[in-house]
Image 1: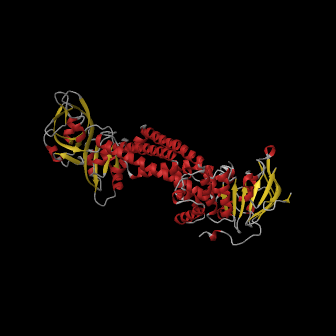
Image 2: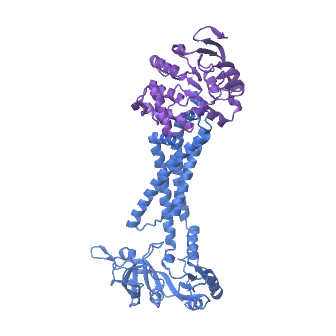
Image 3: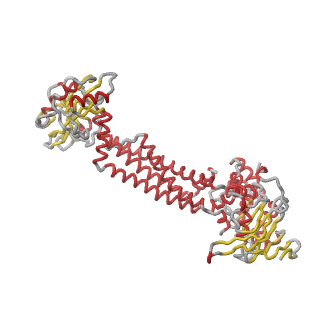
Length: 385
Length: 247
């Protein structure tokens, strides 16, 4: 009977297209908003993703998320190195700094200071130059988006030219030379990212009594990382997180203390409501228009179970088409937007499943009213003119 | 192909009703549509139910077809009492044993003529391809050519649509066919042709046909005519030998 159900559905072309448009719009809105939300949330811990080598991040116990930096004494790195199970530990500086551009304006940047000896914590990918070039005098490495965007040189006539190796910057009244261009995961604030050595970073940074942002460490092979974290906490009185735990802490902070989840959830709920109102209403009208035929089928011997199956098949068919179109459009839009702008857009498979579940919910919600109507239909209706 | 869909028993009477009552609504709004109907229809005969509007013809045909439950009295259709059957069993029984022809045809507009006719077979579990083949054979009997078989109902005339409806009522070889005002939407010439078709194809020794009609011009197609008024059968006339059989 699926054949009859589908022909009935497609036969009423205007309503069929109306239902699909409603579901496509709902699916597009849900997927797009959720993908942007996911992208933004992933950017909140992008620094942790980029610094791949260390297992353990040691911070002040009051730190609530990655950007909430409470400086540590330089001696803490030595204490961490002394903890049983730690293979190595190095200091890492992270701070905000103003760069003065060639036209006299200022641009806030993220400054990262890497351990002078090992350069642990460097960018995940170099586009030009080498990480080791940071050992040159006044050397910095700039991320590609910053180099072509906010830190770009202003040429006579107002034209912008990307920063290149050999160009200079003024960082907090200190001269710096660009020795490399790197690629990093976009940060939450989308500020340019500048890498230098730890010692140089502390000279660029405003003077404070304590300057070290993190101690990053690696556990010895075979050691349980969580156990090593516990030992570090016992010995130093600081807080030690695994990378995933620190990501989670940051993620939860943004969920709890920013309005982002509510904003995006509102958009997603709007998508569901639009889907239910447009598609549900149209689907219900489609059922009402076909009530006489459902009654005829019932009179001719079709059981309630098979009628239920027909309506569910119709609902799931339009749902699948609407979902496919919505997710497809969202993906294409996302791909184009990501390649041309700095928009945060991530579409993991879990999101596709969640959108599918939302669209299924819309379809079942829409079908429920129709099913109720058809199940209550007296087959004797066929003899009423 | 569909022979196994029908029961092997051959009752003397296809329909036997005694004192059948049916009331719509409750309390002061109650309307008694059937007030003790007695009727029997034999296999092989075409029985017409006639009477003024609101006399209970449609209610009676609904009860006989198993699409409406009676309130009282006894009624056996093809040896079965619908009131003693579960709803789903009644539905399946209807699917196997009852064919319907409606006043407004009730053809599904998005299905072609042959797909519409194939529907009762598909409801009874016949696969689509086989059902459509059987439907085309049945449509051939109602003088449909291949082009018409592939047409949508909306592209066909009223007479052609009613011929599809007759083919649909017959395709699964039911033992009872109920026709509700089958000619009222048609002109008199087309109406007579439709009734000729019903007479020629539907009436056979194992099948009873009940036709509800107002249309006196088709009375000569009946074997017997049951006159109804105010929820009762007032008298039954043998149309071949017009003497009052019962009053």
